[in-house]
Length: 112
Length: 117
Image (cartoon, rainbow over all chains, first blue to last red; front, side, top):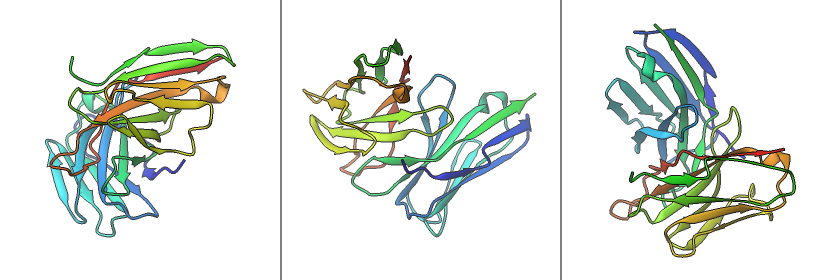
């Protein structure tokens, strides 16, 4: 199936560092979303973006909807141990459906 | 607990057997989605329902797969004659369009992990 390209695949950082990850597509998306998945759990929505160029924050998380509508970025500031997990971007191709195309994921490890 | 509920959480079966998973969505959500996630990959769309109507099915959903949502509440996903390639996490999600606007904001269950030996 179709998946979005996410990078980096994995990151190992120290507590307190900032993190950046991105997601690219060959298709234009109407909505970009970022989810986090902990081991053995389902993904949980972090941030949703609805307009090209939009910059949205949720606590220490900031995400942007790329101007071309083909990419999105997620930044996490001052990482803490509970940020550990897999981060997935997801795009919504059409407005009338929640059918999402997910990225390949970025695995984040935070060391104290 | 008012979240999306899935069971069983884990299922180990022999190749060729049939398995069925159940999903109970958040009660006021009228849309229900099934996704499949294999190790190291993101979730992949399988099918979705609006109320009891199945509106879209992915090409990933072979003839051995069938999903139902008979009363527009819970849903079942059945896999017949399981194959080793069916081993995956099967995720259910639900949503409710706000003011008629579909936002892409899905609420996922914890998933049902299938292992086919």
